[in-house]
Length: 103
Image (cartoon, rainbow, N blue to C red; front, side, top):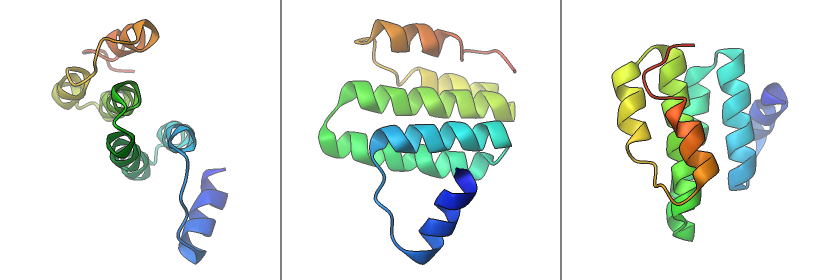
């Protein structure tokens, strides 16, 4: 999926839905392409801000927290996890798993 998305992005400007950005970022983390995952999460932050959606913004920060955790940047992971709002109990539980643990 990542390879096809990257190929498409080289040909045309692609406008992904925010949910698809999360999926692409997660796939990039699993493949070890942390820089690309970070790019997708930053794109999701932009979209969440445009939509003025705190839950979507929190999911983006949760993803960045998980990404930095995977990189071994625990302080940066913690920084992103503090930006998560606590309006979504599922997200809050997910975010707690990203605080200070290295995978």
